[in-house]
Image (cartoon, rainbow, N blue to C red; front, side):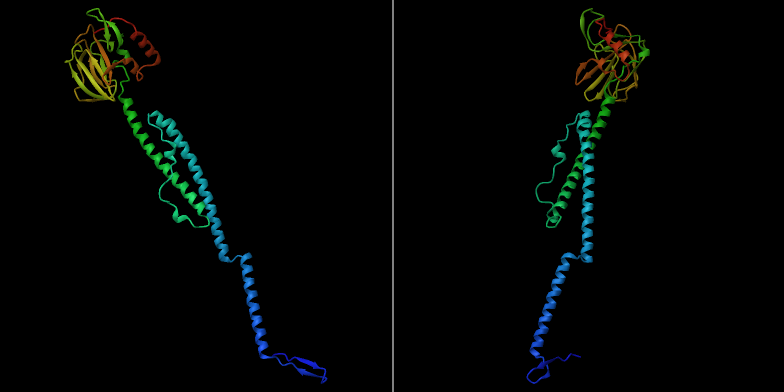
Length: 323
């Protein structure tokens, strides 16, 4: 029930009832409503600036969590880069040097991606710069991994070839030390046993009793096992690959045939004195790319340092050869 208001009329000396005009009431009501609406809007606006809604709190927590995850990701990428750089350094300065391969340039390992912008779809956000830089960094790491993986594949292949090469190179004496009478003659100018003239002796003579085993000095394929070469008598030639060929002459008999594959240390024949020979011995030669080279440089697989020094001393004596 609305209150009734009165006012005192001094002329009539009495109280009279205040009659409220309808237009004024509507005006007051409209002003009150507008003021209330304005106040409510201002309250909501101010509260929105200083008070977070539950959704805003959830989004803020999600954003903070994403930023934390990006920081952790960048730390992981930093550790990955350190490991990759260490591997790349060893790859270039140890592995590729040992296997005689050219090092991989740094710009090739760390190259980015040119051409079309790969990160267009990541732009336009509040944290676009952070996201784009992280993706660029990750892409470079992935490319480094691919480059390093291919390099290691190449190194593995080169290691396999190196292993084959080391097995193929003639690296032991053709006659065991315990079977030797002596190392009769070395590589160089020697006195011919028949003409007594000085001439080039293209191999090494290992003096041993007739029938002493002769061994292959490296892996390879027998290309000759005959007596059709002048002066050599019964002889064997083994192609080791990589330009290396070994020759074993003046044999008593063979233990291999042409085109047979042999391994280092396989028994291939026996010491004799066939062909142009003065006494039982094995005349041994090594060819590299068609040229005769001194066999004394290839005995690292069977001699101690003392034995090698003793052989070197005998090999350098300008004595008479046995063939």
